Length: 212
Image 1 (cartoon, rainbow, N blue to C red):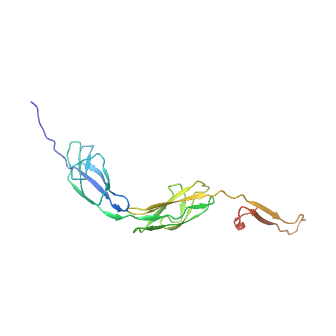
Image 2: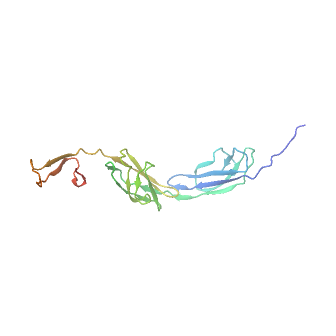
Image 3: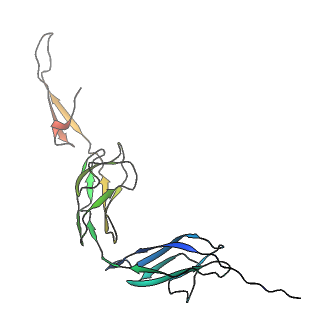
């Protein structure tokens, strides 16, 4: 005799997190996570269970309300959760012009943001430089000591539909410094003498030099 039976489905819960549709920018997204109650692997739907897929993240979505459901390996379904993908204005960022500086030089940053953005953050990709204030559009940046490779500085607006822009810091080859010194040809002990040092090529600003 062949037996029959039914599967009693548990209560399946999950979290669905929307990202907005950005006008003039990225499409909306829904990410499903924190699934509990069922038998893995889960499948996911945003059309009230009409179609299921294996991936938990849905991208390329227009603004609107989506009925999110999941089902487990026993085909047990969760209740539908209405999730709204809203609309946000795409923010913009302008990091400013590229810079060329000397090794260990300090760079002046002058950024701007738009599209309704109210705050932003500077980043050097984690190479270890220092920002005077990473959250101020007008700031100074000090590269790591002795660093001489190109650095990409990124300005990113905070919040949804973030705008981002980069500038590049390049390091110039230090100019060859040629000095001349003039003074008396001879001197005796106790004489006060004057030696005049000047740069004939290379650095122009003599006040930045040290002597020994």
